[in-house]
Length: 166
Image 1 (tube, one colour):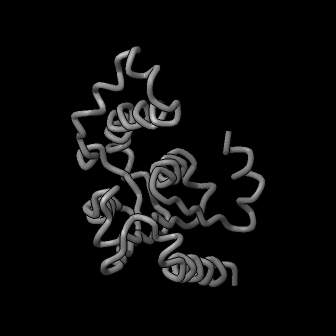
Image 2: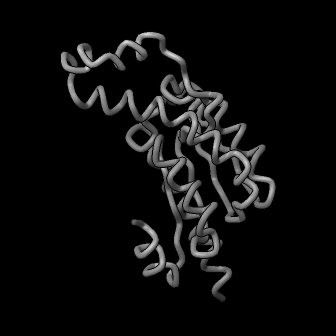
């Protein structure tokens, strides 16, 4: 669904930014359509299945009687979490396809996404330059608590794009 939009704007230079579950989306686009994107920014992104938390109580949500009693948004969220590990694992061999310059922003006190995602992303980005920026004492909500880091990363990537145009 995003490919036509990417193709429409690729000529002006694309910087894809993904926060949380947006991170795997950005990674997948770069893996599949890398030639059409230019720069990537991962913000507290959940990227690796092995780092997804296991919460025993989520298995209870699978039972139809229980699903009927809880809000639909929680059921949807739970379904996403169960399928995400398999999907993230399937992406592992394709990390080598990412060739875009990448910035990884990660808070050291993120309780929703394991901060090790940043370290693993840098390790798996073997065919590009990747900068991992640790934000001390920051939690998962970087777009609200530390937007200046995201702006700085985008500015850096704009500078890279502008210098390649000259």
